[in-house]
Image 1 (tube, rainbow, N blue to C red):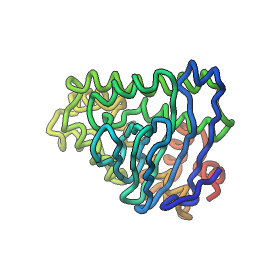
Image 2: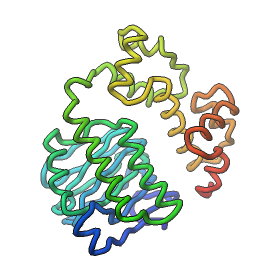
Image 3: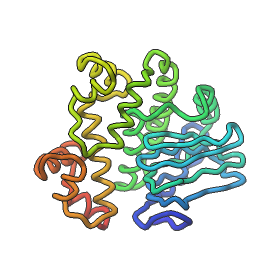
Image 4: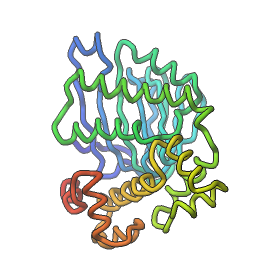
Length: 279
């Protein structure tokens, strides 16, 4: 269904879940899941909403605040985990694309508390975390609500990835890699070779490629393709530009290479993806 509210753009979607008594007593389960496109006016301010909320900023930026922590800024590729059992607020400060899920369950608070101990916001995204949340939404959008045991599996896997990430952040964290990743996200249309990125990080290409994959979860070239495809998806869903125009604006060398990369990684052609999302 299409949600309505301040700052929510028309192509946004939300799906509601209704857990059984068994799921509420045994599993982590979803209350609702969404994929929102927002402008800078999007804001939610509530006294409570009995659940926990995980948000991923695929594009743009915003903020969050709840009773456990102060206000935290969120940038592109950030996750935030919010305690909605008390007063909370979150929103976008610019045009943004968000994936999010409200969830609950008998072990939800303990898992969330363990993650919060690692800092105000979650470690920045890496592929498995992003993929789990996007998979949850995409499968719901395509086939309806997931089976309750499957909901539990996906949510537990997602939260566990954050716990593992937090436990190893000291050995994995290199500020140079974070800077290069931000540079890729800001400049996906540029010709970003391995050698150029390594030079920018003041590292040898071999050491840079190994460090980048260990920290991010993807090789530099694959991460660049991922960034370009995320941008292309946004343009396909929010503009009337041709597929060829989008291909070049996202850094692909040709329409054919764009279509091949899109279909190989997302399972559909750009045109089919656009038609499915009513553009």
